Amino acid sequence: MVRVKKIEIAIIVIVVIVCFFRFFTKVREDLFLVPWNDKKVSVEGLVIEEPEDRANGTRVLLRVSKISLASSTSFANNDSFVLSTVRTSLDLKYGDVVVISGTLEKPEVIVGEDGRSFDYPHYLGKSGIYYLLKGIDISRTSQHQGNRIKEFLLDVKKSFVDSINSALPEPHSLLASGLVVAGKGALSDDLQEQFKRVGLIHIVVLSGSNVTIIAEAIIKTLSFLPRFVGAVGGIFGIIAFTVIAGASATIVRSAVMSIIAVIGNVFGRQGDALRALIIAACGMSLLNPDIVLYDPSFQLSFTGTLGLILLGNITDKWFCWIPDWGGLRTIISASVASQISITPMILHMSGMYSFVSLVVNILVLPLLPLTMLVVFLTGCMSFIAQILSIPFSIVSYSLLQYELWIVDLFSGWNFAAVTIPTLTWLAVFEIYGAYVLIFIVYRIYKKSHPIKDETLVKQLQQLGKNSERG
Image (cartoon, rainbow, N blue to C red; front, side):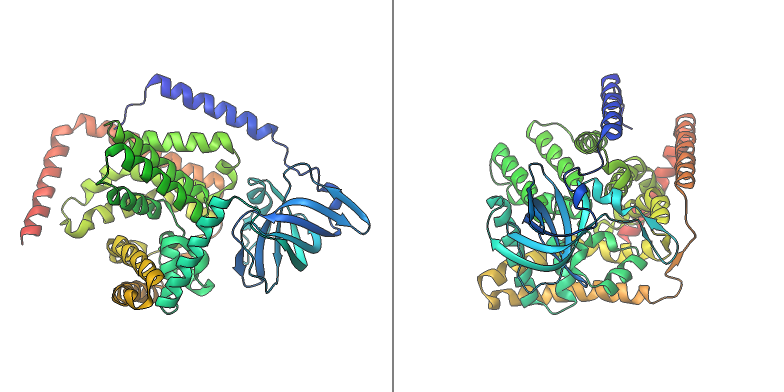
């Protein structure tokens, strides 16, 4: 168990106070766009994120440079952002300057069929987006006006996805792209629903585990270089992947922790996951305190990682009797620790609980690093020549086919997942309060019965070793 020093506690308290101050003093309105609310306008702006194709059109995030209504025109002197969805045949890219005509309006709370509500205004507000633009018409006035490095990285991503699509059929290509660079947005709505029912959606949302796998691969690839040079290359590689993957809160959190681990390795310091998590969370919260309350991905990522850190050793002892073939024991214990930590939040956010999640994760996760590696090689070889990618695409297809088959098989069961009534935040806090109480009782028991506890663990470990030999 990590011992937290007094100075670290003091720093955390200061960070919390500063975050509270920034949170309650933040202006949650774009004063420049207020006069244009509920009016038909023409907005000119720079596309600052990769456009996203959806069923109802292309979703585009603009930094406003000019907005006009009839004969009057106003120029934005501040960073105003507008999120627009518009149907277009244009191949929109990051760095384009476009003019979109439509109606400017404020986002509203989204209420689902089950009565659950999603605070869409605050979710967008955390990123400084306070208005939506229902686009009717769009035209492009110029290109390549964004950051050239970011534009280059996103072009590499698009080329990589295109090469994957040419080497693999659907839905295998969609899953392949989702695993490596594109996230769940690459999957169809039906396929996303299947992954949610079996509790496996986390592998295609470019979560912390994906970033960790990528980071480890980059570091191992550069291990032949001097330690410092390899570390610098690894850090730049992690940052580049973060940009390519969209730099969501989940990805940034994992990237920061990976970079801390790389720096610690350079100076010969053993990694401390809990401190790295606290540093990442404190830094991100200072920059944008809204993510703590209004970003579900940050909440789940932080809670899940904290659960793995605090409960990982405990659950590992529960399953020390299981042979560690291919990391099976680690996957089972990590899956259980993660399930325990994030289930209350999952039930609050979606109300869906998967009864087959643990089994499906055990069947799929051992092959995930290999799948990502072979998919990556498939895309790289396809860049060079289509024929070179054939051997890798065959292996990729086989692995992806197995994973899709598992998802399809288990998601088809009627009892695979259930939806429960709304779980309030108060109930969530009460459950986590019970977790804390149980954890404290466990620590007290462990200190008072160390010999008995260690003897039992050794017996179970011996049982696991005997099973491995058998």
